[in-house]
Image (cartoon, rainbow, N blue to C red; front, side, top):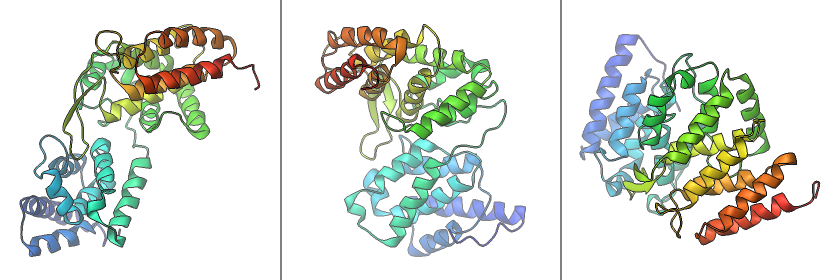
Length: 334
């Protein structure tokens, strides 16, 4: 980004106020002059705050957005750059909303072009960035308020969440946006778990929360869907997925039973069975963790998977269970 320097603090604050006002006008369909002025400010280092970044992103994505999804698509290159610049410069940023904008950037309706490609690259880099950690405070994108799970865990486990190393561990967990982590991710998770004062207890309590969390309406920041039913929203699903894999590095009797409980709860519907899943992403991750169990855990993991196979009716998840069963049943070293 071609910034021109931060300038004095009062000047930067005044420019941020101007940019916020211009952005609001562009959200409401302002004239070309406002778009051009906003574009110029988007390229400056203005020292954006977390609160200001949150305001800009919330105008674009979510239930209180000022633009409809089709309007965002039509004005993407006018509205997103300043919001992205603010997220890059702020101490913390709304990871869920930046992730939604990144998904929107792949829409065929936006076409192609160097400017859009550059925005995609910047969003990718931002989403890979681990958050700055302030001792004694949990970053606001961890256990966020887009679902009931995040606020419930914050209320129940405040001391654990602000303890030494907790935010670093959870921040790393929240980066896991796929079913299975890389080896590098697991090495980093193991080191952070070992460095957290009460890391094992933290993992256990938050996974117990997942296993007990009822399915409910969560905010979905996908461009065309505002609300869905799940155990957790997008960012907290990633965090819980990371917790599941972190549990593999804990030498405790509760690990396999608790991962199995998460798999059963997430992999079945409200009635305890049926083809519906409370959260297929979490169920799939929990099943994969059971399938990755080694040594003395293999036999118990196989038993848990066998019980799941007799209960879960979702076809896609049933295939994952079969693969995991095959993995734990295979001879060691195969």
